[in-house]
Image (cartoon, rainbow, N blue to C red; front, side, top):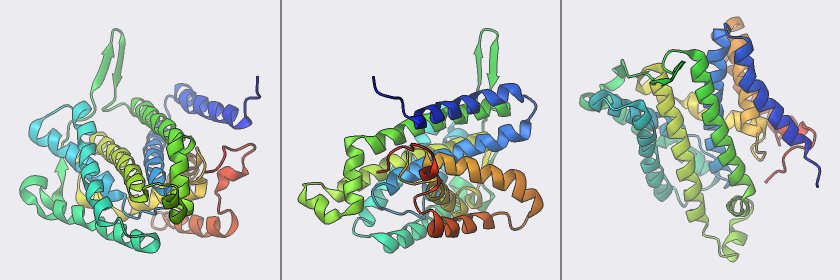
Length: 321
């Protein structure tokens, strides 16, 4: 029998800590909320990184986040469907936009793709801002149905109002996304994306349809990002254009992935769990108006001093792709 890698023990220990600590610190409401949102943003970072594995850099993933949020909110508000139905269906709106994206930007690469994706973010935002009869414009939609309560005999879990329950829900979604990310990196398809990222000419010589494979990565990435947006809308109970079609939401997954290690299985999650709690719990109280400058500084330091991300410093880290 082969040795179990140190990284596997570290990953198992990390999951155990994330699962157990709320049971010990039941009254740490602020930590439940901050780390729950950290799980949400880590999921979005994993979604962003699936697309980035193909060599594509997106600055417009907030478009998928916002579309998922708005689609779920509109289904809930106008048809009063359960969030359990509106969230997975709402994320399909992001997939539709991803299809348009992949067709319109299929010839773009590098900085041109990044700029086009940034411009694409403004399209759904402008529509949501001005379609008053459907989206209520810049006022947004409030009073959305919260997540339901699960009752199993004596056990009653209120996902709508209990921050600890929300944390566990978001942790579960993040772990599922992490398994999917692991599969994308380690599978044959992941190697296909690696070839496309490194050399598209060589990929074409091997018979790989680069545009098709990159589009598949984008569709999967968009669905996950849309699902995080739908979760966010139903947890917050409201949605508005400036909140969900925010450039900050496009920057966060990029920063988390690059800082943690975009070629590492756990890199995006590691980046999210270091930077977001640091910003929310320590820097925001000290610098209420400038705490977000952390992300700009992190990008500069990462590019200059550890371009492979901090996951590369760990003993026996997961192999890069």
